[in-house]
Image 1: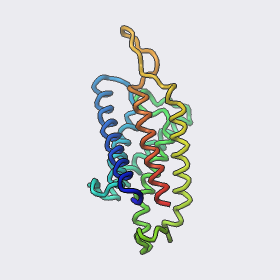
Image 2 (image 1 turned 90 degrees about the vertical axis):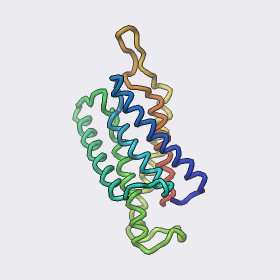
Image 3 (image 1 turned 30 degrees about the vertical axis):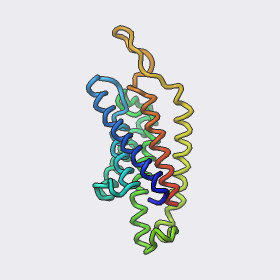
Length: 203
């Protein structure tokens, strides 16, 4: 991954922190019986670890093909959930209510993991800074995904103040039912920002 070493190192650390937070959130929601986006949190654990390894190769411990299979499967899950929402189905308190952004995140991960192999196949080294062949043909899609990430981050930031933790009075819970929704949104903002940066650096 090209870019200043201090910035890629910082972003890798942030991605590991996001992965750790989402793993903790999964455990807490399950233990306390609280509602949480278990599918989105689970895939963000994997994304955080995978993106940290892409930013800092020393942190990578799994082959790209394995990560591609993971995110392709996750993308299929979110595609199914999105189709269900289009048909008017209620996903329940333990499913992400907005699956489309996560579907696109999974597609972006598959693309980013494929781009290094496509670049290597052209015989062009990182020193040239130019993409040719299959990698060049993926550039418009990479740009569209980067623009989507910018828009998604802006949308999340705009709705951040509207989110509020669930309030409990006696045995009745009022307000939003999700566990720590603002923290979850901040993690999504960090992940979307990092993913957008990585996509732009691959152009």
